[in-house]
Image 1 (tube, rainbow, N blue to C red):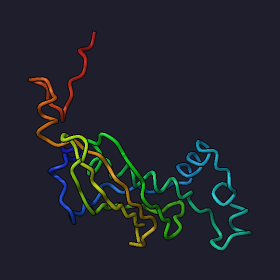
Image 2: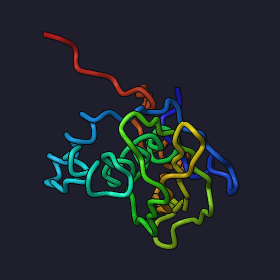
Image 3: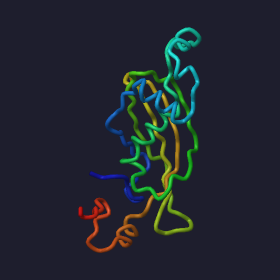
Length: 171
């Protein structure tokens, strides 16, 4: 199984559909809110959401949906990344609710070789998240620095598979 891509393996226009999707539970949403200290009642208080908001139910915190999609994209996009350089834009297009299932896909927008280091390049991508009905809920653009294959292979000691590092022997 491939985990990430080298610079040469990205093609402008390629679309990677991330699998599997993730059904967002109330627990997921509340735990994320508590971990990040976002205690807004829109996310945490069902009575408040029902009586005082347009949606009449809790809305999943947007940063969880963004984080979920970013994580979904790692095996296809940034699994070999040297660095995540920039989040160029982030838009929450539609609300997500408990019980919704999120699916993601990423399109390669651009790629360029590094101007300062010949062993790497920068890839620009756009990731889109959809719910189970196909409604776009989140879209973001980012730039990732990834190694070139020839340099990565030269940097690995003989007998070591960079795709599957060895683990210490149990004692």
